[in-house]
Length: 191
Ligand SMILES: [Zn+2]
Image (cartoon, rainbow, N blue to C red; front, top):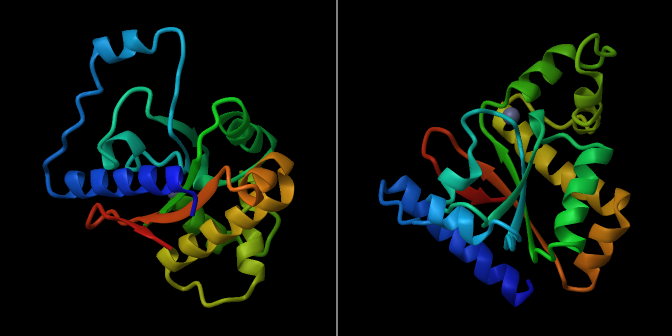
């Protein structure tokens, strides 16, 4: 893993432990912080995660304004806008770390399981990014295991559909960390 990414990842995992222990330390949540970054930003990580209201990257990683470039879509699903948002973070903001953060009890995973393999009446673009995991025919009776498998699929998708992300990873400019957030413990674990 590239050194810069490793340093930032360890910092975020340590921040998550602060959150779990009820001892958050971030001070970067004030108007003063915002004013410091009024005309520029320098986040050190991009986080792709679900829109779920219980998954709030800044809180669970114990960090504040200006630290994370967060991209969210229901089910941590992907598409052109999502890919390009991450590419912006990688190419323009030069973040060394991309965190893919799946989570427990994801409504999209549950919905996809109910619908599969029927073509979706609702949310077709979202299901299009989850059905391929079900196509693998693994035992996904556990929603949380399903979410983990989906996170792995998302990494593969990004590597195949983005030259910018692919080259950044291969040239040691970007590290992709696959993570899973457990609602019952608050812990973020590496997959
Ligand atoms: Zn979700």
